Length: 396
Image (tube, helix red, strand yellow):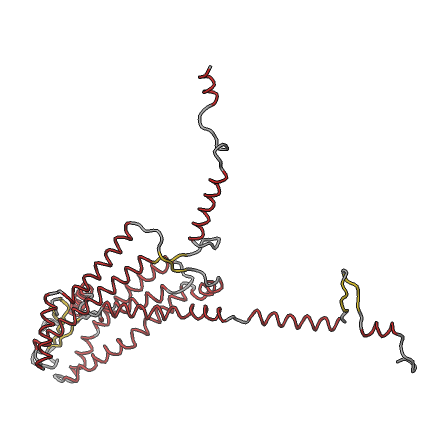
């Protein structure tokens, strides 16, 4: 209202509804401040919606980081089935026992006595007998043996799985690193075994001919077995991870997208694949035969059933129990090997090419291109072979 009079209708229309003509449409005009506020609001909404993760992306991210512990669980299960029978890794156990005995004698034997001797355990040269005049017992000896769990294979598999599941690292670097790491673990395991004798000797010199003097050796074994080796393995992997540029490689692999590889059923079979499948089936047959028709296992089972029925407790019953447990363990071990060979042969890991195409798509596209070329090239358009000039001369 101006000077008590109402403004004309055109003024109200221009103040309240400021419209303008724009490309054939009527759009409201907005002040500059309002336009800036609207743009800021739109930018805030768009940025927040872009940063938010969908539930599918959250699931993919969780699977990306959860596959390492899942792989470790699968490897642990495979190792448990593999080492069910006693002395599963006997060749490796024999070599470690021999090195353990030789190094111990080289370091701690003198002219008066031999520090250790090598003998058999369950038919394998894996038993070590320590000797010192201050050791407890009538013969001043302490008997130990290298089991499959003491061979260090468990630790090798654990660290190899961590290295193999690390993203962004080239395959050749992983293979070389696994070989080096397994060699280091082998040496560290030998050093762990060699430390048994000096710990027991020093404690028994301080407290001679007492069974308690061996507690320090067992404490060393327990601490290394339960958490010491695990700490060493994790430290080795962390150092390796930083040495190969793991953080940057993993970040690049994460930003590249989830489709870096996939597992598919094998479609092309060669002779070696058929032979591997046959070998896996043979392993499973041997596993079944070991608990159904093996003579020694069946005799042990009969003895064990008689011991249970008669409620007998004797050394013969104990030996039968061990023999039957080994038969079941060998069956589990052979079955696990057969399943792993069968799965690794029948499945294949596929990776996209430089253009992002999967192998199946590339093969399908190639076949489609070939079909299209053969379809477009008709018979009358094909280039004729031979010389038409030569043919014309022959006719003349």
